[in-house]
Image (cartoon, rainbow over all chains, first blue to last red; front, side, top):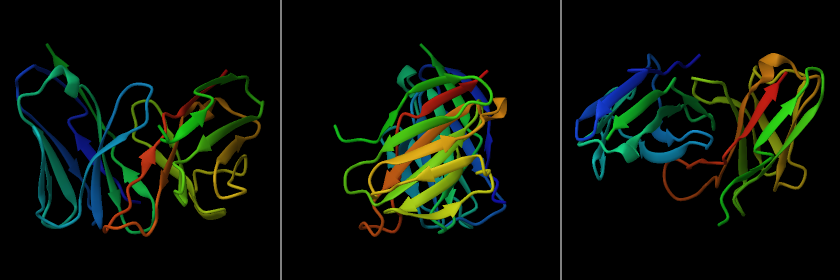
Length: 110
Length: 117
């Protein structure tokens, strides 16, 4: 069973601070996706990383895929209240379904 | 907007009753997925369709659960003899297989939140 562990599980920070969320597994994934989910809504895709060591930037968000394609991180610079939500990583093994992590619930306090 | 839609958004039922949820995918998306998400957890894969064919089912999908996609467009997920443990958010996603790029993107609907009393 593929298991994706995210840390921290909960994170509460002040507006303007930086943060990093981690997604770790013992399994190798062909790709890894990051989603943000708001209460009562479905997850919304932020980014997909495919190549080991790949780094992608989306405005204030930086995503990195580990060299061995087993782990990933999400770094947010100068967090804003609009960044509040549940951040989920999801790994794809090539079998046409996604294995989601346990999630990191981020709260950015104004 | 032609995003993924799900109906109903909320459902409260008594234990032992049957419930049915509907998912309308993005037009022309040939793949449709069902996931279940319990409080504080990430979504868990249940099953997926390519066109009208159900190609994979998770062990989470007990024999009380059945999913259909009769015409390769909308899909229904039925739970028979509901149990309190079935309480969860049921998410639907769709994607276009063989689209350009190494990985197909799954687009999620808003979910149906089920509460079994």
